Each structure stands twice: as structure tokens, then as C-alpha cells.
Image 1 (cartoon, rainbow, N blue to C red):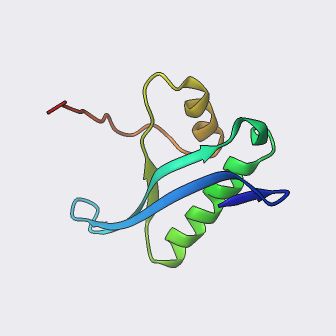
Image 2 (tube, rainbow, N blue to C red):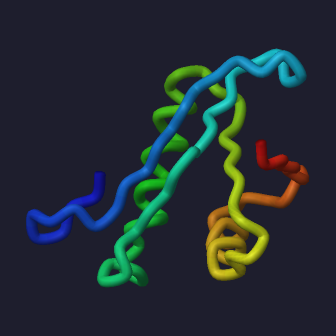
Length: 94
């Protein structure tokens, strides 16, 4: 959690899992939320850095995440943070 003046302004979810195709542990960032009033204050960057360090300490070789194709601001943010587009994700409603 990220706090600003005692109020929650951001959160990140990290899940560690072993991927057979990597033959290693991966840190999957499942959620990253920053409240509008905290955007531009490096909250997202600090949360990502925390998750990356947690994953590194747990022996993960990388972190990965996915985001909706329509979230262009998020795409720019992740690219600025050193992430690169490497996969396509497909979904099917059931």
C-alpha cells in the first residue's frame, strides 16, 4: 500500500509463480492502482520498485504484467519504467 497523509492512495499486487517455459520464478504484477489525486507523485514508480525488489529477493528472474490495450497512459508509464512489450494475451468470455 502507498499512503499519503495517512490515506491509501495506491496499491500493488504481486504473485510469484514458477513458469515451466522460463524454468524459473516470475513475479506477476496483477494489480497496480494509483488514486487520481496521487498521480504524478511517483507513487506508481515506487510501488513497482517495491514489487520488483520483492520478486528479486524471492529469486524471480523477471516481473511481468498485462494491461488493457486501450490504456495508452499505462502503456507509456510501463515503457518509461523499463518494461517492454513481449507478449499478446488472448481472452475468451465463458
